[in-house]
Length: 216
Image (cartoon, rainbow, N blue to C red; front, side, top):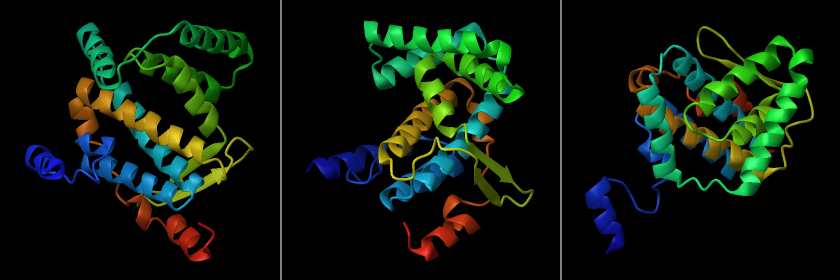
């Protein structure tokens, strides 16, 4: 009975419903679903790669959008309404520690690190956790994805930050980017709607190679 009611209201299967089903952009919705599929296969690397492509597209769209104070407030309200943010004392200390770390590193920061700092500030204005954003960028800091004009991905990992056996890292990355997208599509709907992923994750050569290798 519950399943039939859910189907009538949402037009979706109760069993298969996930947070990405609320994502309006079909390309991004498919990308995050496929990233989840990779995680179910145990392929943490492909999960994180999928979320990073989505993250980069979302941030680029937000940078092109001049958010008014009202839109930033809408983002914060949307985030609180959807995820019921509870700012506990421990969270405040975590954010403070992260901010202190960032400040301490600014003088030695490379251009990439400074760009990551700008991203954290931009996303923080929407009401998302500065700490979680820093944690996500720390996780993906060793990953570089070069995309050809045709949409082919070339994924490179140049450090030890990604542990391919750590499923929790993949789950965190997927949840974080999904939350970011749900807020971003409310505050910058046109820019997010225009994002396209020419070649889906499951049709990328690297996906096919890893599947054929049978390691995941």
